[in-house]
Image (cartoon, rainbow, N blue to C red):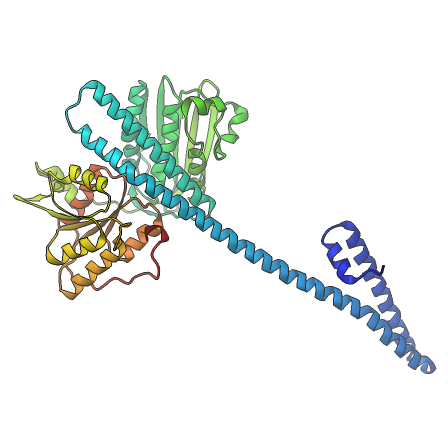
Length: 499
């Protein structure tokens, strides 16, 4: 059976035999081509053989060029098909990745919504008079709810990192304040275990840096939380230092402890996803095994690293290093100053004897109850069950601020905010602050809310202090909102998760 060049090309892709055959074919064709050239050259010296040589050269050329042309044409077709298949596979993978991200975002939203009720009412209950046993039960609810939220956030962050969609938001921030916030958050855990929790900051470290303060807090929270978790006696210490280089600083935040330590052969594996040093560690201490993986990826996204050293039974040291520009000094917030100066801070929502009026657009009955319990004693609240009801209420009344959910029936938060801004422009009204209060936490929803005319963004579950601070910021008069506003420039499409 004759060997076709199509078969040769197919075999070339699958094994050594095909490559050998193709190589031999090329050698034979090359020899034939060389022979025909010799005949052509010889014909100049033997005119009597010119016709014969010309014919031989012509047929030799046909023998050489035809199979080679057929071979390369077939290979070109294969390359086009392979490229088309690769493009199709890439598009399919991108769609699958987008579907996975949307699924995780929707699941996060659906879990955060009831968690708002659980943690919100727990916070309200904590402000009441409780006996020791009731306080213990309430603390258990809070810890369990916070642990669940940590798992949700870890899964979402890891999904972003795996999809290459991790985004940093660098701003000027106070480094010491950011770390002190983390220490204050985790100090109750250290106190429960009778651990000494120390913070040491070198005096030459600049007070203001430029970076993603939220992500830096996340890294420090993870490192400090792990240190407290795996230390049963002794101390946990945070040491902050830095080396200034050309207007930037190589920041170093080291967290060391006197805990259980990590075996030397397990040290490199602890940064792998879903991994802890020992299976028994997971059983005893819990956790998803994503915290250090995410922290390491975040550090690398900042151009830095996390280095771990440890001695089994003697403790561990985790050091986060990253180059950060030195920022400008941050002036104290005016409303924060007033809150300290006044006996009754502006956050209490009153101006003299008149309570600030807040329109709340929220379709979930439990969340409406949480907001009423948190704010009802200090603000005059008006509730709307969907975006259309909120828009209609806004048209016939005046409010100092609007709390706007995103996912609502009839008219969602984007449409309602856009309609309110258009109404303000048509009626020459001053701009009313609209604060997005939603269980969506992705950057795309945050950016879309601003594009549709909202002014700020809070994610559920929300704490009383956070919502108070946000309302104080937008209703205290520090931010100018009296200018007339045109209708917002709307994006082509809202995020799928909010429709």
